[in-house]
Image 1 (tube, rainbow, N blue to C red):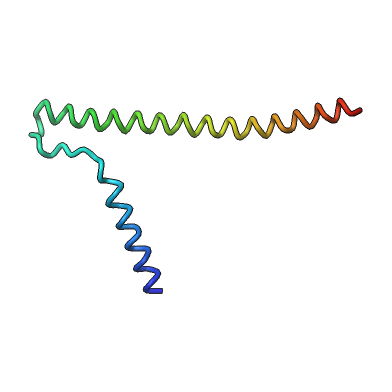
Image 2 (tube, rainbow, N blue to C red):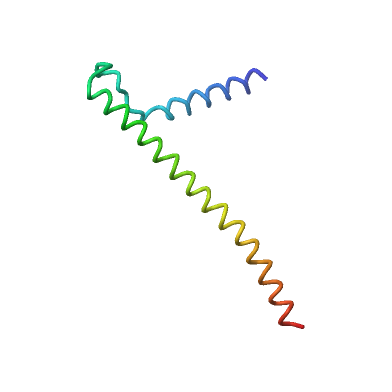
Length: 84
């Protein structure tokens, strides 16, 4: 049990380090400087764009999955109608 806990703990710490690796740090600028505000604005913009892209991709995937089910059902009905 302890071994499994240790393995999970190491994996979580390993992934956590990589998830914050590419984040831009604005701490090197003064809090009220123009560079600091630009840096923070770029971080917010990048996160907003990423979330928007993920939302659009998830929506497209869901729609194609659902429409493919409906299309299969319509094709089955067409085949049955043509056979009769």
